[in-house]
Image (cartoon, rainbow, N blue to C red; front, side):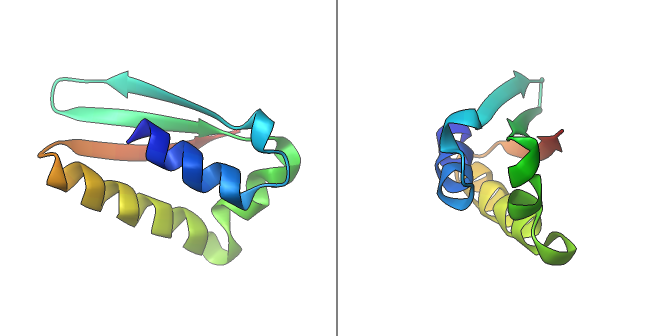
Length: 76
């Protein structure tokens, strides 16, 4: 799932080398933290948060298929 978010984020931003994805594993939920360059933050979030919401939807569908729960956090 970490690779999925990294792939999507790198396709969206102007500076794909600055994309960092880390995963914090919990007992039932894993938190995936996405960091991008400051100038690309708006592209990842999107107008009204639509892009971020779409990424979270894809992540929840992929994690449900693996019978796990994952949450996406976009970190500045």
